Length: 313
Image 1: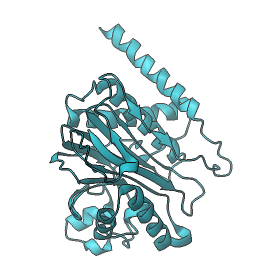
Image 2: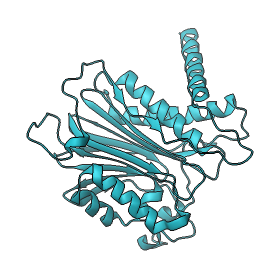
Image 3: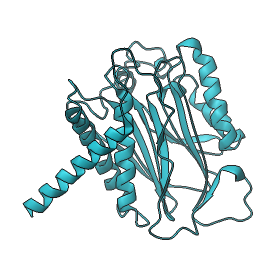
């Protein structure tokens, strides 16, 4: 595989950056993930971190070097992340589980599959046109689908921030799937939080991404969103790739500084950029979450599950 990739996140006007993003890849499979911790619930940033760690770990376990059933993998990975968020709540004796939106994309054999819960979005673009976009799990999107609100009201409707689906809620999430998308060289995939898409029209995003390399376009669209929102800006995060094909094109120079070529990777090797945005000061009276604690809690949970599985056998 060969692709160009760039990711960036800004805290905006908030005290804490609750967005998380990253990608992992093997020789033949690429995973992209972005999560937006929900600010209306305690420690949304922890939920986003747990979700990314869980999904990336499962990818590293199952991509050998490809995932056998991409759609089934994505659905199971998002549900596992939901479970681990609740386990994090129990381990930290929290009154309720932290919550997060999630969007993930798996590309292998020149085919993209994706899954999401909430209003973090995926865009698939070609030649400056949007071929597909995830539909937000928001009340305003439901109203638009029923003809009770106009598409132009997405950014202004009173219910625009009310979600009915996410990871970490009391009920299991409904994972929406998209698949069967054949990727062509030059295609773009963008994952972003609502801090970005709520500030820039879809066609503006497509135009800016088409006109520049991803390494230039992602900072450009983030700055445009920050300027449009001003002092009240939400966290703004984007992860984008420009697909260059399942085989290496040595003549390709587009986005050369951000190009990843996987042809020489051994079958069992995984590379990942799954990481957190720089830590920010927590709100008053709330202890900052510890990344080591999250990893330890997840490891303990997985160990308990494995032991239970052996006993059941």
